[in-house]
Length: 115
Length: 331
Image (cartoon, rainbow over all chains, first blue to last red; front, side, top):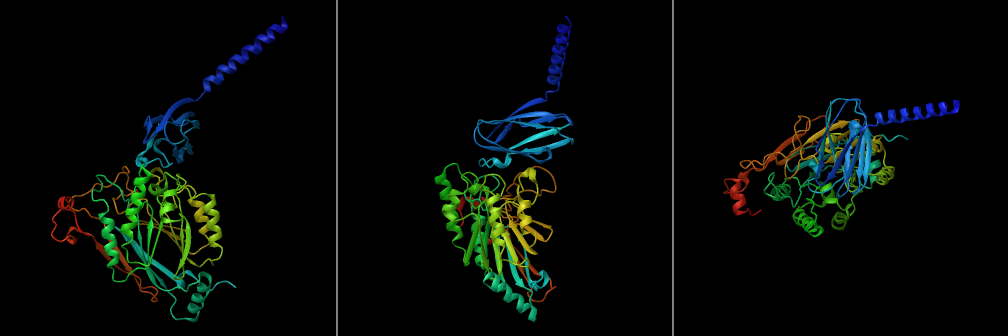
């Protein structure tokens, strides 16, 4: 009986811990890169909130670069990357494709609003 | 023994850019002193050539093959720039092209045709030496393969009249980077020079953070500048930003030339990165040459600057851009 009670307590604490971990799971935002745009073209984050950006390129290799959030990566076609960010400064920032992808490359940007 | 050369007494590279490019005059400020002669002798040994005055021109971002509202005149400004340079009273020794010679094309055959058209126009330049580096529109899609086939290596160095010129490629990796291999090459290339040697680096993108959110930077530009930091007389010439810009950091001055196709707005004013619209009444506004005559040995004298701006008046009998477009202009 005593062992059963201990076992039940352990099980409960595990469940609580799992639920707690689930509660802290960062918000996920899915972003697709394709010539010559990011979809969506604007994302909104909250200052201090940890967010997971799930980024995929659907055609050629693109880049994603935003120095204030320390994002600097290539996006190979078909590959999904998860980037975890916690913005510390409010403002509107332009993330760009910095892997040359063709004639419209210079206008390929993602607006990141941090509230 | 420490080289008895200092920046003030050795050599001055004076220049500025407007419109179609920039003309630079290189003048040794040696005077006739024994120290000056010793400096010239030393640099002659280091570079293989003793420093003597000369001038050169920087042209940038011709984007041959570009077609669009910001400039419906295609290669007209580039061709006019060639004429202007050929008619300069003092013929420059050298023309440097700092990237985006051509506009990219998905079709390699079409892109090759654009490179050939560029070469056809550039070949009319009556100068002894023409050198170029690629821009991302030349080399970003194929890692520089087509550029190398048509123009040769994308990074290299050479000496001219006592000045060491270094061509750096910060586009062929597709990202705005020079890359560790080229940086190692650069360090090796610099080894044979005293820290006082005059060095001109020419490249496409800025090597400093001008506007990273406009891709006006080079990711490993700091490493390049660290390699150059010991050198007291470094000038970096670049393009990419389609406008004049001068920036001094440490001992180095970075100078951008305007484009020959369209201009971008001032990055320090704000607003979006959009080409400045074509002005039908002033199709060549901002295009022209600024010629700088360096007074040479009289250190301290101001350079004489002469601006030459392209206008429609140069096309005899034409009254507006519509006529240019309709009838074409024989250059």
